[in-house]
Image 1 (cartoon, rainbow, N blue to C red):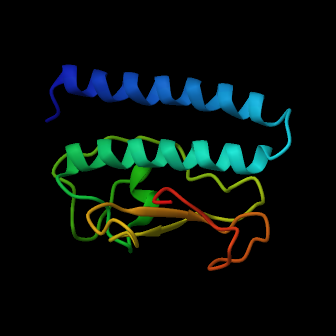
Image 2 (cartoon, one colour):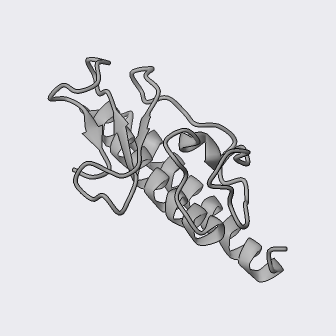
Length: 133
């Protein structure tokens, strides 16, 4: 069972991140490069949420579990010790592409990498955005 104070801490952190994120989305859509700025903010939010997940679960989600582990309790190994829903869904980037999850990450193998295909909507090209860049 998750102590109530720990649950409160995680929920408060997620709410604060959501407010910051939504403020950033509104601001970024009014200037050039809005898609890139918004996606970079989303990647930061994923990074914080995955750290929260790791603190509760004891491990990061596997590649099979992916980002979905943030909103749906995994039923495959590694099963989380404790789990708390941190998102309602995994959003798409502003260009309509799903984010790619990889653990271990390309530059930092101790942390997961979240990747957007970027404006061209094709993975593994120069315009990709990553939380590890």
